[in-house]
Structures are given as C-alpha cells and as structure tokens.
Picture: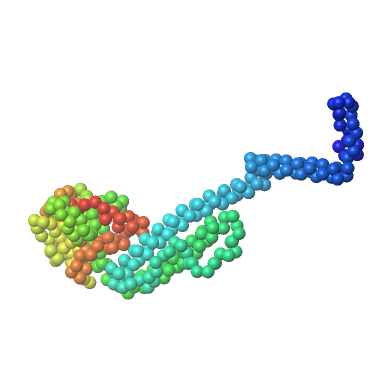
Length: 325
C-alpha cells in the first residue's frame, strides 16, 4: 500500500480480516507534517553530530590559518616584550648619562606604558572579529613601541649634541670598568648598604667590588693624574686618580703599584694589579667614583663598553652578593 493512498487497511484480530480505514485530508496532512518534522529533526541531529567530530576541507583550512595566525601573534608578543625591555634599559641609560655626565634632565621625561595610549576607541574597525582583542593588542603595542623609539631618537640626538659640546671633557670622565669583565662574572657587590664581611654589621659600601685572581691588571677608567699611591691598614694598597671636572676614582686592595704620584695616565692604561691587601677577605678590586667630593654609584659610569642588556645585567648583579672589604 502507498503511504499517501486514500484507503488504509487495519487487521482485525476478532474477525481475522483487514478492515478498511478511511483517511481524511486533515489526517493525511498531520501525518505528512509529522514525517517531515521527524526527518528534519534527524537531519539537524545528524549535522550537529557530524560537525562536532568532522570538519569540511574548507573548515580545516580555516582552522589551520587561525592557528598559524595565533602562533605568529604569540611570537610577536615575545618580540614586543624583548623590545620593550631593551627600550626600558636604553631609557634608563640615557637618563643616567644626562644626570651623571651632563648634569641635566633628559629632554623627554615620560613613563613608557605597555598598555597603549588609551582614550577613545582607535580600533573600531577591528571590532566584530573572533580574534579582535588579539589583533588590537598587537596593533596597540606596535604603535606604542614606535612612539617610544621616536622619543629615544630625540633623546639620543640631544646626547650627541651635548657630547659634541663636551668632547674634550669626556676623555676625563670615568666610563669603563677597571678590570676586564666582558662576561660580567667578576661583578661581586655594588654601591649601597651591605653586610660587612668582618664586622658583620650593615655598612654603606661606597664603591663596587670586582672578584679577580691576584695579579689581574687594573685599568684607569679615564684620563687623569695620579693623586696618591699609599698603603693603609683598612684599604691596603690604594691608588687615587684626579680626572678633573670634579671626578676622582679610587682603587684599593691592590697587590702592586705600577704608577707614581703626579704621573699622567690615559683611559685603559694599566696602573696596578688586583690583590688581597688591607681588610680584604678574598682577592678583589674595590673601585670608587667620586663626584665633587662625594662617592657615587660606579655602575652609572660604565657606559662606554656595555650594551643596554649588559648594563641592565651589571646593575642587577651589583645589588647581589656581599662585599669583600
């Protein structure tokens, strides 16, 4: 029998015959609608199950592209972090140069923000995409980095102008480390409050300690004149260089003098050897920079031979460890 035929037959168990059942138009419509609805529901269920576990070739391509884009943005994010760290170090170095060498404030005093410029919505065109936040974050950070680079360009331009003005003076400014320390592993302790190794009390360390074997060459950090060479109970063998322009450098705990008072020296010239004299507890060089009669942090005067990353590292290392005198 056809499903849509007008006559239907139903088996009668009492008479053991098929009784004719008449289908009305309304009943036929209800049956057709029920059949259609059930088929549609099964189709939707089948599609949902299929789409959950299987993807069309086009969807697979799109998924790969999205994943690749997210991986590229993750790499960009790491690069942004690195660039921001380097820029922060450059900003610190430039500020230190202005303050310590030129005794002035940098022309641009801005705190670099990693959050972008803020304000009104500059990225409205990016709204509505599934990865809109990711795209906006990278776009915002790239624009911020460009601004930071532009600011540092103007600061460096100002530094060059000032350096030209003080070109003759700069050779008398301490600007290198007093011992060979390219890998920075000789940095022991820096400027500031430290625990004294003998007295076991907190005392202000007025210089910077460099660990090195006895006999390691010690270099003058700028042009100048040897002011004194003498031996004391506390500092051992000591050399003081007068560089002029308010600068003096001090080198103590030496093993040997290679200069005499009144002698002229140039930056990088060997003036003595690392020792273990005075109240030293291990071979090292104690180095100080004095500006207008007051000790200042030597780490700010190593700008001639350190990259921004090395400058940041030696600054961190100088805050660790203990003094050796």
